[in-house]
Length: 271
Image 1 (spheres, one colour):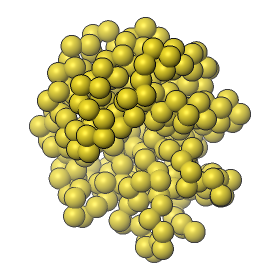
Image 2 (image 1 turned 90 degrees about the vertical axis):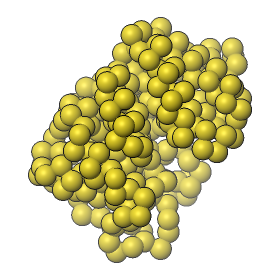
Image 3 (image 1 turned 135 degrees about the vertical axis):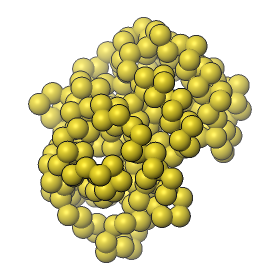
Image 4 (image 1 turned 180 degrees about the vertical axis):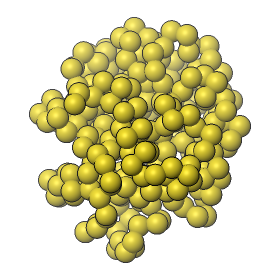
């Protein structure tokens, strides 16, 4: 069982895959631990039609605790067709569905052909443009093509967040020029792969910064004691908060208040 020190102020996890099968056996306890860690709200990520529908259902049942995104991840881009687009559009009408995504491009694994990923991405941009909902975006090893598509359509979109940012300072500058928000995960807590993010996070304007766990992935390596399992949970978000605050030279209270206000505004979270 994960044990974490609670955040100093209420915080919002803007990206958690709570419909993942790894949470089925102890879902209630996972939510209980998140609440104890001062996670006041969680945005549940939709990555295909099934998880998007489940996220919407969960957020409708407990709107004070959850919101949802609806979209198709680039790994599943071959699932996108006219019927899938209609389903996402229908989900977008749900009151607690607060963003279109997770969508974007992933050329690291190339699970789907790149042209298929691009078509899926553009079609979901069109849905976001038509509904006015913000976008929850994924990009890995596809920066040039990703930014090219985003630049072409940015004027028609509302807010955009590049979630789970792990890229370079140059990529960050491109996203900020495109008026994007940036989501920071436990990758910043990884002394092997995430050291560059300690510098990058200082360059993110306060009103563009948000934090997330991307659970069950990316468990923070700063978590003490080190858990026996590698499954991440939203209760570890205070670890991300502390690392971000230290890197920015700000108090945890400042970062908690700023990122929470940004998340509530971006995702239209009440309260």
